[in-house]
Image 1 (tube, rainbow, N blue to C red):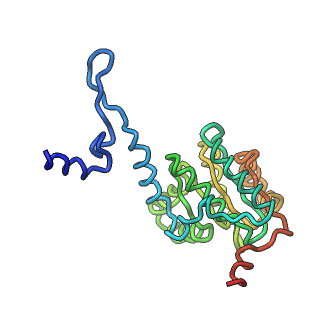
Image 2: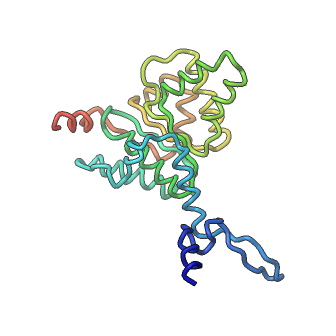
Length: 236
């Protein structure tokens, strides 16, 4: 008896014994597999491992986002609302404006919330993405495989979008990614120091698609927004 109890305790879920499914009889007395309540959580944890975030970034949740000013509370509320409505809207999220305002933090917090809701997400830093594509362009098979990393995820978070100088080749890569995701209704989370007007002025075809995909989910941090990251480092 004690031996049986010991074996049972080795399972994270005693209901399905970590199989992910339980078996029940349907109306025709046939045994069918039914997803266990633990399955969704396991899938979320697996998605978190594959999302591309470092352990430090995984701590950037809504709970750890500090709201010292009203604009920060408003931005946090809007990002949280984006997550709550995601299943219905399938919308993108744009976080634009001043550096150090908390755009990356809110973007990651939103991404982590979606993952917790069992939505697959991938994080990539803009310059690293462009560099990886340029390095693989001479090998067509490798280039397609690299491009698929940014086209196929359910949600893609591009951090520091348009950071630094861009070339015509960069525009071509970005358009291909954005347009492919636009046509496939696959949302983006974008953080950028550029304003919406800057992005539209840089390339209207890309900018207009991003704006349409985001709809109401555009968070702007204006030029008067203080640099929280810089202020925090000066205090330490």
